[in-house]
Length: 446
Ligand code: PEP
Ligand code: CO
Image (tube, rainbow, N blue to C red; front, side):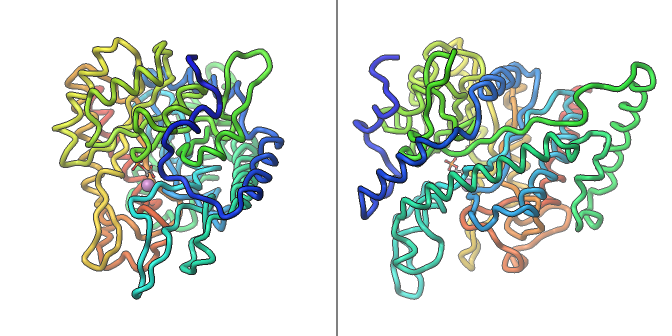
């Protein structure tokens, strides 16, 4: 790898970073994190890469989802469990609809740093530095809380470890057992409009399992599932502190997460984030927005995947329901020209954010669905593969996105709006989205 070192990014322009008031305190925290054990292993990272390669070929399907911004306060059993429940329910529906293994990647256990379009926030005439995620500063609206605090990176590492520990225990310990999908029921889920369709899918899977077991005996592997983690690799100091060499494998791994991604605001070809990511061996996600030209994307592919390793590059397009038809075909065509395999994923959230007359950020269910449907159709019509979907969602009963079967309206947004950054699909909207994708997949199979 030409001239790359884990900190060669320091010689490039790093956007979306903060400056800390005390360099010594920062260095101390980073040294401490660098000595702590990694959160994930290179084995898991390589296994995920192989699975993402399958998704790129259409042999598996990626479900990536979670909060826009995880908060330290939400590192709680009930909230983590609710998120796993909805991801499990959605993946079951997607397995049934797509007839493909589903790869579950949570935006969890480290999604604490946020890129922001504005550097300041003004309320009632007072202007303060913007909130940049719990890893950098605090959410409260006082100048003290908005000052970047390096201790938060240590707290973030610890919260990520606590979250991951609980996820691993649940995923291994019977909670995820396919024989017992009733464990994944959420308290308020009976009222959900799509409960019946979901129950039918559960029953048909149960019957299939029973049948196979009667014929062939106990099926291995049904008692547990794999969950992988992902977050935006934004805070480069933090990522560097967890970038490690491992015995018996060449190269460097980011062991803070399985799948780090480069956000739309930090994808400059000559920028620090791309420089950092090009040298690590993890699979790398790249957000592709409407401002990214095919030429720009080709340069990124050359830098990030010079060898064209399958599973290495996950291109997450987030173009917007009104712009995807214009932009996606050219991008697919250009990427095809490289001859390198990539895994295409649709993020139908980030190109469809709107602000209501009251100044509340929201997204319309119909727009999200429309972008997804167009993504499926455009890839299919060009003989390309849409290998997965990327959502901002939660297992809680929040009111952040409008629309869906329950008819959430703009007037409902005040009732339970909890996201600190972008609006998420709530439990019911998430399940409905999965059912609609599965239906489309079944139709496509004929
Ligand atoms: C995000 O995924 O929360 C995000 C900020 O996305 P993007 O970089 O695509 O805007
Ligand atoms: Co977001």
